[in-house]
Length: 121
Image: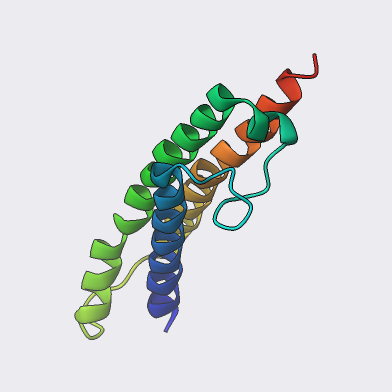
């Protein structure tokens, strides 16, 4: 049961990261209806808008790729019908790996906040 939960978490993380990257590739990160909350300086400056879109597209694509990767080993454990298992250390590694994926996916949004702050200096 725990393996199904881990599989679902990584799958959900991959889908969410893919959708966020899609918004970046479409260039709608700064749009209020399709995008995300960004500082007014980023919305008003075309260069900062382009930078925000590229940041989200790049980093969220990386987070999606990283989150889909563990689906193969977890899926093989699930499909083995109890023939395989993951040790406690393996589960800890999956947890740390998931934390890294979340950090990679959250990085562009924190960077965008600082892009807006750099205009006030």
